[in-house]
Image (cartoon, rainbow, N blue to C red; front, side, top):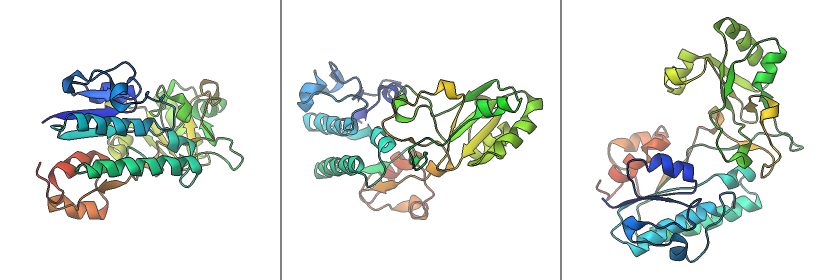
Length: 296
């Protein structure tokens, strides 16, 4: 089946394109082609230079890339387009930038539908404001907190960490901590007393609850409320380049995501879809095998 994957971020293209899937990214579109589909120059195909990864319209360029390749190669049957959450980190729903983003998103989505695409839309996470009314970030720096209580911390791992630090400064609402076994009971007590810390689990409980591989996570797992972020040591987090007041994700409160299809869901997944228990990972199965009039 002729397939194409378009991503905004190059890091995701490298991950999901492993194994030879034809793939392109907005971040590396300048000077790039797509030889699998006879495209010599992506920017020439679009008729515009690619925006930077921190530009508000990088996601729209990804959507335009998918449309342009399809229009040049109509044998394409399966298209996956991954966007970036740069705007959502910077602006809440209803703010001018957010409205501008979704107006353009809706317009481009309409073009996909006009071209006859069956469409599924989902997200990998939600987003919440994690700052006070004055714009200052609501953050607990966990290594600082524990070390001030006399508890030695070997490491704090923040899964949200990636190269795009202007989005979130590597601050989210979930953290793994590594520390000696003897220190863990007191560490749990100190962490649970922090305002906004909602859960502190040991490794085995965390692996069960969050469906994580037990050999690849920390000794303790910590989650925070919707308006609180977690960090390691304050000195290691540079927030000077944030787009705006801190908005981020990573915790329980950012788990609910939309799962939208352009056709009614039929068959064995219909009841689970209506009950809202499917996950973002179900989107491919849903669109390919369980929509009205679609044969996988």
